Amino acid sequence: MTMFNNILEFTQLKFKYLYENSLFLQKIDNLIFLSIIAVFLSSTIMSSDVIGFIALITVFLTFVKILTKPGEKLDCKNFELWLLAYFMIVIISLAGSTLFHLSLKGFFKTFTYLAFYFSLVQYLKNNKNKIPYILATIGICVSFEAVVGFLQNFSHVEEISGWQDVSGLNPEEVMTRVYGTLKPYNPNLLGGYFVAGIPALYGLAGYLFVDKKYKYSIVGLILALFSTMTLFLTGCRGSYIGMMVIFACMFGVSAKYLWNNYKQIYLSIVGGVVAFATSALLLVTSLRARVLSIFAMRQDSSNSFRFNVYHSSIEMFKDNWLLGIGVGNQNFREIYGLYMKTGFDALSAYNIFLEIAVESGIFALIAFVGFLITLVKNAINFILKSNDTKAVIIVSSSIISIVAVCIHGMVDTVFFRPQIQFVFWTMVAVARTLIFTKGNLE
Image (cartoon, rainbow, N blue to C red; front, side, top):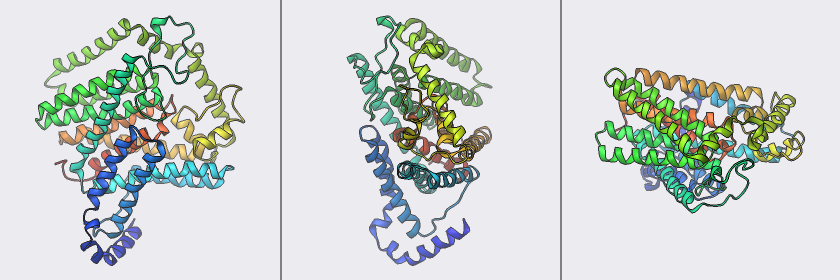
């Protein structure tokens, strides 16, 4: 990094006069913040291309900032070395792809996501006080989708495509699956979006409670619970698993503060949540049928479809284990046609890790898993050792979101959608900022 920082120091020196006399450059942090917020707001109603374009504006502004603003430097943490290795392997995979033009499109998407992460890291280094506002924006977007989904449930929206296997189900067991306003309309996408964003709401509720802003904390908790309820209306079974991971991790983190002095309250809360979930499964017929279908294996057509995709994807990986086929769902779909069982076309491998292995090879998978393990390890150490309660709450909510998204992504394809990707990388940037930089959130 020393070489890059020397280059930046040289360019910053050359642009010093321009920076000191330019209103645009003096206010560039404000513009970056607005563009970051715009990414999340646009995610609720705009197409993938529009969301990506706004994210690239953030990247461009950050590039201008580091070239011109005195004192801006680059640094690389241990888990980011894994991430850098992953990106380099993706480039090599792109170069070796037999469908280069299709893989190039997928590469640009990957570049956009990682560049957005880099931009957030550079921005948050000196603007840690904006982290609650960024998480609040994510929380507002999640709450908006929850309200829309709740209304869709009562209006009994019809499926746009076959979203559930209704064969063998009684009419009362068929669920109205809500999908919100995220494009393309898909209840699994909404479920994945809730898994990524709901931890921000719970985290903000805790953050505001510690900050003694009790009214706002209660509002945040109500919105978090309401969004959790709407998550179950999506009928996305992968998001059900993700939500269970969120609750388990939240209870694990809260034990640090509640177990010694408030053991009875802690156990009451845990018992209440378990009792409520059990009651919901017993009393709501459609929800019970949806949850039980997870264990139906080949008897459920959706499960059977995924097993067929997994089998074909593993065969693809065996034939392309070193460098993969190249990144991107269009590239995947073209190659998948050579391996698929008749009538079982697929856009992706329906598993994050299998998808990475197929697209970019075994070493890309190792690098990505290494990135996740190292990040989670750093976060756990921070949570256990830090005395900064507010920072622990925010880091916890970020890492819980990351882990839950990855667990959900083991059985679904929506991880690679921009609505989820930008939240995912934002959580990584937030955790990175609080773990590795000094100072508090104020």
